[in-house]
Amino acid sequence: MNDRVLIRILMHVLVIHKLMHRILMQSFSNVTNHAQQILRVRNWTLGLTGGRDLIAIIRASGSISRVKSPLSLSGSGIIGEQLIEKIRRARESKKYKAAIIRIDSPGGDALASDLMWREIRLLAESKPVIASMSDVAASGGYYMAMAADAIVAENLTLTGSIGVVTGKFSLGKLYEKIGFNKEIISRGKYAELLAADQRPLRPDEAELFAKSAQNAYEQFRDKAAFSRSMPVDKMEEVAQGRVWTGQDAASRGLVDAIGGFSRAVAIAKQKANIPQDRQVMLVELSRPSPTLPEILSGIGSSVVGAERTLKELLQDLAFSEGVQARMDGILFQGLEEASYDNPILTLIKDYLGSL
Image (cartoon, rainbow, N blue to C red):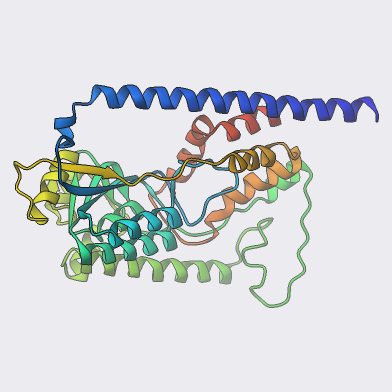
């Protein structure tokens, strides 16, 4: 075994050691911070003391994707299949008198947004559902909210953005810089439509993407009109990807009430025929914590080598080949923030920078 191979192995071992230390320290810090925050909250402010009636709380925070990425830890963004499982739990349980969907999302995958919309509609058939918007509930985030019986937003919540984005990455110049060559053998005029990321779209291919986006947009707009009991032509006036503050959205019929989480609780109690002076218990349907195999799997994907890591990151970027119900510009903003929130991505960045 030569020295270069030995050094390479030692570097990988060092990366794993540093990553495990960072994950453990961050997990301990998060648990401590959450415990301190819980201790500072008075129970009566949330209606937790002596409550008999239960209201389910489902949090939907972050960018929307259909399935969990191999490079993401539990808790990063909205995973469609995981949120749907929570919604079904709330629907199938008779102990919950109502449900509140707490949304803070700029949107994301259009199909995942539509599937979650359907599940929230089914939930609303069995019990009152209130959408409580936080900082952002735009595009796919609003797609979820409009399935609820009532929508509550803050004055400055960014909402609306009823529109879709589609396309693909053109990575030809990047491939040239890193010395990467990609050859495709295909059969059929459009067989390589999504695979040929080394070149821009041809005019006929761009037309296909445009038609797909138009169909997805019309479905989004029509469902918004149906959900808000509004004529399609009137919804068109406030749609087209426009972003509104909560106050503006309320004046245009996109939001029912202005207020925070406590306002959403009050509306949920009203619709569930629970007296306002009666205390309720708020039960947050939490997601499962990441298991050790999941953590180790994430670690493994970060140290398999610079070439494969770069390929995985590019694939993660290019997942927007499908139609996206996403507020414009949020895709890259979210990726920048992910480097600080996700220790695996942070360490990958450091590792690649050291090569």
